[in-house]
Image 1 (cartoon, one colour):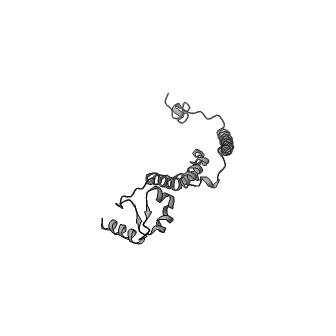
Image 2 (image 1 turned 30 degrees about the horizontal axis):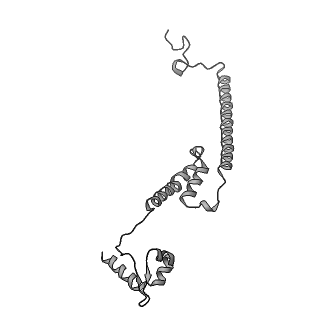
Length: 175
């Protein structure tokens, strides 16, 4: 409480009319009923300085800071990971960064339609890449099966449950 009283005393002693005008404007002071004593120059009609501080919007700022921290330290690193990148929406990440950094007026990003076209093209490329990868894997499997068949002299037959093929009669199997 002593700090509040001291601050009040300093403001009352050293802040003149011109300081208040520079801070809030003459119109605002007049609307609040604050005037200057023409004889002494003291500022009259100021509300009592109680030390009550109002911090509006602090909760919103804290939430934005928390989301920005997650974007920078979690989401963007995941977007750079080939395992998780296909599941990310880059334009939405940029929009979230824009919102949390208050860069809306800077016109940094494309509009939503252009971003959707880019995203659609990337999804098409990704899908085509998966398809080509699967075709390559099938070709490798066909080569492997062909090599196995050529080396054994006949088809490979799996046993029950996908196990080894059954032994032929007389080769250790009991009938």
